[in-house]
Length: 241
Image (cartoon, rainbow, N blue to C red; front, side, top):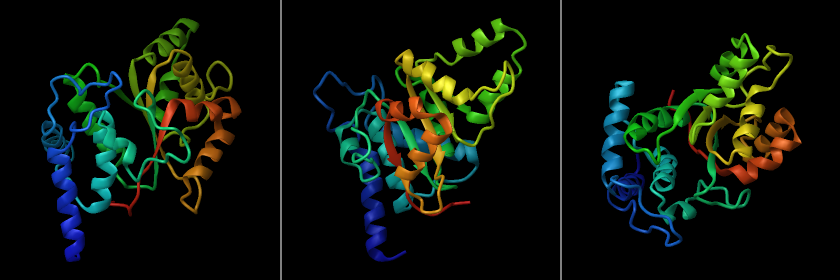
């Protein structure tokens, strides 16, 4: 790694350790209760090591991808200035969820798995992690209409992550159903904040084209709601796998 890259990496690490929470918006948004400016970094590094048996690789790309999540969860206005935030696509807001778009192997799944564990102790941030394929399976094993009602009740959690959307197949229980589309619309109608991850759907690694492709997959009704529901975040870098 070149000297200027090392210097830039160290600067980002120092930001993650010390600067979070320093620029909280004044519009009724407060720092997350009982979560200090520096503690989330320590929790994340320890949690990553515990979960995956290896150290978090803190190069420039991974730190830039990670810090936008830190700023978002800590409601730090620095979130609004992150290069990874696609302000040209969707107007950013802490009241929206997150749609993380990027290539394979950039940590989208890994980071949220660690955050899920950390935030179990923080009610305002606690969320449930599901893969899109897992939700389709849960729907397909419903045997009675009442089971279907329980399924949709379960996805009415205040915060929820759906990993790897658009990779799932269409369910065939109770007729042909696009489960993820139904879940997202259900959460939109109930004003619930949602996090989703998605790989690029095109060889050009274009976030806008990926959104168009998601619209083709889930329909125009859901496509219009993507911009209302989500801050669009684009992870950059090369695969760590």
